[in-house]
Image (cartoon, rainbow over the protein chains, first blue to last red):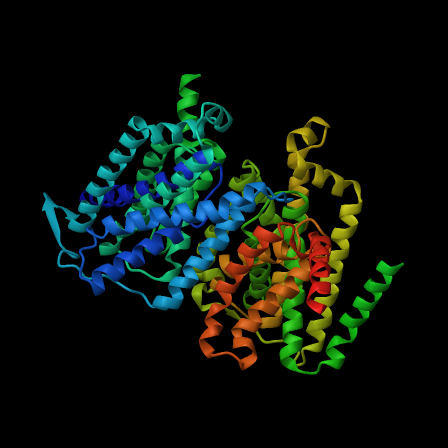
Length: 294
Length: 321
């Protein structure tokens, strides 16, 4: 029994971070209708920023959130403004041009990091890195708990932003109906730029929070891009609330898979769930909700 | 007539190339180019003509390669049988991939296939009793010379390009293009879009599987990180397609030539002329090339050939004078 509870706890804790990754992608998907295949690579960039700050300037990884999130926000805005938005005007056979472009961006980001930091695995040593506390027989890894709390705070802040501020409302309006939003006076080009920046900042926060518990190398982005996508499918495409559900589900599923199936299959559990979701529940959480309503 | 003449000259050049260029290195490069011509053309049939952008062609390439490899190591028969059965195995996997992924449209289909590729890579890594996991499969090459491999690859590449050419001139080809242009409209005209998307995927996966099996025979060593690799197979297939030109017959061939050229130029640090660290940059060169091609040549070198020609000819007089 303890093993099961322990597994679930670990799953929920890592699921919190997956939520941040998934929400970022979900936002971008909702507003622009494209999948950002450079998502994991943006996280990797944030992780390297955190790594540099903590190993050369001895800044605590959690404080480096203050640097990494704005930095990635600007990077995201830049990418959207100068690389992705111009593509809307170009006529081509494949409508997936923007998606392919994000692949290219992801490759370039990974390679720039490889140039600077080489392919070696890096870790950040913190005084609390290995600490844990116990409730009953269940151990709680301290950095993961802190990360989980940060994830909740950031998510709440984002929801406040989307619900209460003008920009947030414009983002939601654009996601619902771009043409109508434009007619209502929303500058949709500006909104796409801000959204991409916001998505990048969210995944950057996930990167900084992962640093104390994870290792780092230039190719780390790819698997996380896939995870982000799995989360979005589980939650329903473009739904931010769904992304939270998807993130937690993926975290718990991976953790259960690692305990009961085998470490080697941990990553695969997520994909298997993904395929099952595609076959039996296309639409994810949002789809289930609609089923119940109708 | 002029077009036929170009094709005949191209054919002759391909046939005599290994007899003129005796260097093993350049013959090897030519074989790699031909493998990519097959994979790129197969990808192009599905993505360029049918509009279903696949990010998972490594699935079919790897399944083909592993079929050939497992035939040789587990059943003890020649890996060349894999050329046939690898294609068929890839087709069967393709059926399953189609069953799952054709529920998705556009970019979501792309990511569905991408996830499929990762699943199968993980299976190949972990199912050690069948695939030997990360150890990989090692067989003994049938020929010491590269010539037989070159001609087999040439034949295969020719068969693949020609088959796709024939398909695109037939009724199927028009169905495929109509699905790409507007799926609802195609459906409303009575085209069974699901069926024809699957047909396109079948043909595409068959040729990719054959290319994989040939790769196994030629390289004599495979492991999951090579043949199921997202970057080196799936993404490379896409790059070959989009750099050369999606939705054109010759596009992938041109793309394969350019991509392998770029890859080798960087890998050898501009043939030893540049400092050695340049050799690490080949993936970055790929990335920059994608960004450049999508921004300025959205339809690839072949698709935008008239644009390139106009641009070059406009520049030329001014640079001469």
